[in-house]
Length: 550
Image (tube, rainbow, N blue to C red; front, side, top):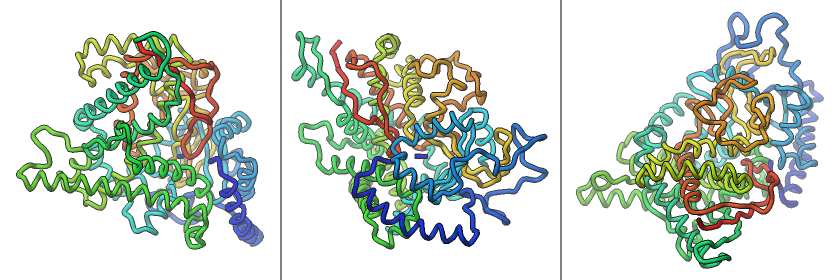
């Protein structure tokens, strides 16, 4: 779901590892072995996968049904493809590669890269068929480097890395504290507090460092470092129920190191996806060491926060409370401990995943959103007008203000349409299906490719136009490509959608709301931002934004 711009040392390390891996691959090929699609089990059943009875089901079945092997592909050798990707640095522009390949081969194609094999699709009607076959325990591609880190360090896995009945049991318990409406009502004021503080500090900085007349001053900055601090501060406030002080004049160096560790973990994940991580672990490969060390720091930082939260809750309980004063929200950590339905070890695993996954994946879309507002002043004024009216009616109630400004939600969806954080969503169908009149065996990894989907003229009218209004109440989802609601999938779909979705959506909407109430945004260029892929899609160079006080 989630290649990477690699440093020369990383690339050289990979080249060295590839020599032995390519020799091993060639030996297997000479013995007449073939690489099967990921998740496909030849000649036997697989747990959770049921062979089709009476033929595959799905749209496009019937007369003229074509075999899986006839699906257009980018090359039959996964290892040769992988070497080509590394030589040409295609991982950095994987999203563009997917778009070009769909334009060349059509709306479905197969691709093999190293140990991974996928079927790629982009039309909403095909994505709809895929999700109808996901079963009770949906599976997506396991990020094996992450799983190997947990296993070698003997850490429990959170729901992101689990599958089957165990995943479902844990996920249902987590949903109550992070996804359900009552949970959102509890944590929304905390997100709003951090968003207001961010804008107050930014306004103070514009007044002190900006140019122009008093109260009409402007300041041009790269806001990305501040947005990363905002995302971590907001996430921690919701997860632990306390602020960590990243907006102070001397923010914690430990928190800054945490942000760097998350970025290093994300950057080292993609090249490890296509190689056997356990082998690299045994060899002590530099790339694996960098990746594991980054995760170790993430876990260490999270563990300190969790321990502080646990001690605070125990002290409160010892004083006769139940985890907080009446009506006080003690953070998701406190809620989970108070309920007592998950072990402390599983709570640690899931809180750490939420913390690691809640920084870049929020801060980067905010960069894109601010830039698009700056280069589309008419859109900016339209959204600001609705926000001002909603804020006035809400009387300072953030929840009511968001409800009264649907263009804010459309703004986030439109940003993620053009710049999806994760560029694919995968599923392993539990039965044989038919997509584009091709037979797809049960257990095959099929992924919806979100970047080409969001920019396809077969799916969206005028896809280059930035238009939050296209997601309004009158938007029916019945444009070309069909599939209705399967055109916006940045947070995934169904039971396996992003567990932090409600936190991220509200965090982004609240910050954008307060920024639009306080500042006019402008940029020096009207060109679309160049992007790169490092497990998440981000700007090639962080954009500079001019903030002018209103």
